Image 1 (cartoon, one colour):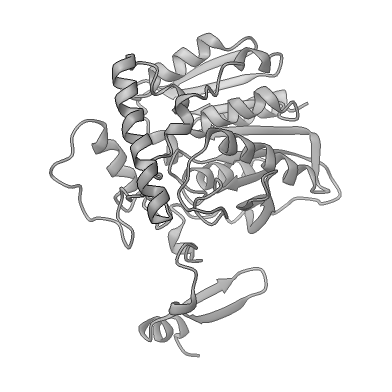
Image 2 (cartoon, helix red, strand yellow):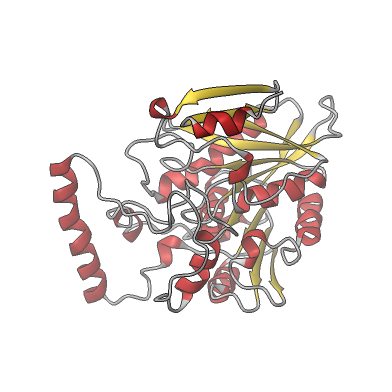
Length: 353
């Protein structure tokens, strides 16, 4: 018996472990795809439950982009039985190994088949150029997850729900407004990315769009869109930078430190990505989701609480706003002691009929 990982990595090689077939693969790092995540349990921000199976899956959305996901199932699952299923999207700039995996692991323990995915152009999902953001395609990615889940023999097509964390809350609601196969929706610490410019006056908005429009000349001439990563790429920081202020302290506490850091989660998109959101409203038809139910979860000290409250007022019944005592925005990404999983379980059990 030799410590193959220790020896290989010290020789500059990449070691991959496939738990399904108990196989180790050793590759030259120089031949690896630089855009692909390193396949290592070290990059999940949580420990997988002993009662849950997880496997990597791929499938395509209607644009032909291959999406990468993790499928979580209860170990006691009987594949001759039909189960309710949930598709989960990450915070805006996040990936499936972070918050979506935390939720999927917990909900699979409670009897659900759960798909956590990387949005198009990001994480391990396909799409070029990298790090693009799109309200239409990110919404479509939820429907593509429903496509995949509904193809599984052990999933009941009439019992599929959606759960969006942070920015994916808006995308999940947008998907439900146009895709009636989504029978119930949960948002947690939601952001409506398309609504972020609503507080701007025309002058401020036009100045923002002028900068983005000019950026497109440069993107075209260089052959790729400008992109600058926000959070460290190679390893988490040991402590927060001294110059952080306001909500940046909260973002860096999660994405910049060991708590939530992931090599595929840079926390930013191409410089011109926000242009597509400026004329696109995700939630114009949120009232049409009714009579399918919506559960909106926020924290009582979350900086995003007002967004959840505003969206709750716009939604039609049946709907519920659930405020978690003592929870900040990022607590609803990964803190299993604060995320109300009993509430979420009850909601989906009741409404995925």
